Image 1 (cartoon, rainbow, N blue to C red):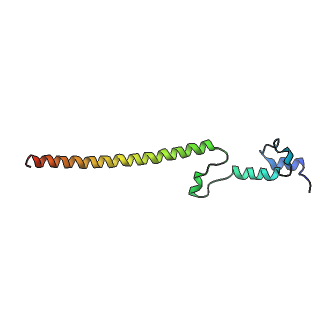
Image 2 (tube, helix red, strand yellow; image 1 turned 90 degrees about the horizontal axis):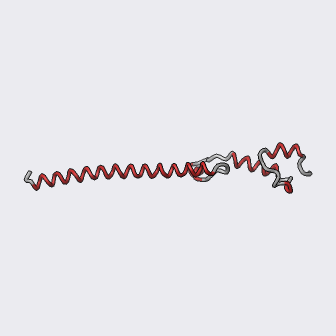
Image 3 (spheres, helix red, strand yellow; image 1 turned 60 degrees about the vertical axis):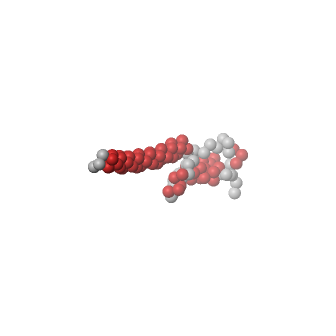
Length: 104
């Protein structure tokens, strides 16, 4: 079996840049298939979302940064609610203490 013909190479390569692969004509169809599989990769589980894709790492970094800021926002919001609740409780305790001092 010899190297693939030009038609087979054109069909198999798709978007693969063959100028750098001129010395590896036999591997071009396989490399094209691997590249297509890498571009079509989608996360299969929750933890796969933390693996950057092969195409657009900037979008992945942006998404992860957004998720982190979202988590921090939720934590800060919960902390603010807890602080407001404990402040209200402390205010009530201080009013009760003031009323006791006044004899009431």
